[in-house]
Length: 142
Image (cartoon, rainbow, N blue to C red; front, side, top):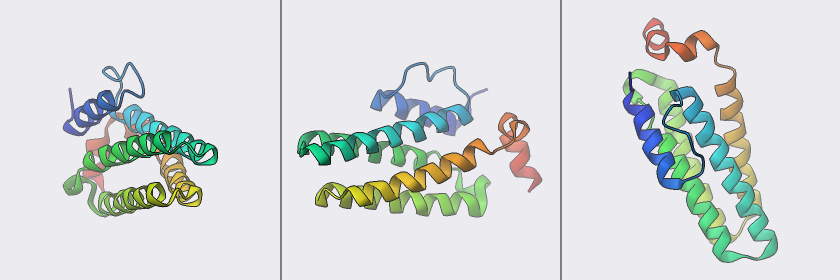
C-alpha cells in the first residue's frame, strides 16, 4: 500500500538525487533519508562558506531548502494534529533561516538549522517499531 506522504517524499527525493533506492523504502525510512540529506547539504554549505565558494554554498543551501520543503509538504495536518502543525511551523522557520544563511553566508544560522534537524531526527529515531509499522492506527488511537 502506498501512502500519499510517502509517494510525495519519494518523488521529491528523486528530484534532488541525494540517495538511490528510495522506491522500496517505507515512510519512516524515507523521512530519515530526507533528514540525512538535508543535514549533508548543510554540512556542504558550511564547508563552502569556509572556502569562500559562493556557487557551491548556494547550490547546497538550495538543495537543503528543497528537502525541508519536501518534509513540510509531506505532513498531514489533519491526521497529525498539533504535532504536525508544530513541525510545519518549524520547517517554515528552517526554510527562512536557510535563506538568510545563504544571503549572509552565515555558518551560525546553518548550524542552528542543523541542530533543529538533528533534534527532529532523534525524535524520529525514538518512534517505537510498532508505531512505525502502523502510523495510521497509532494516530487514530490518540
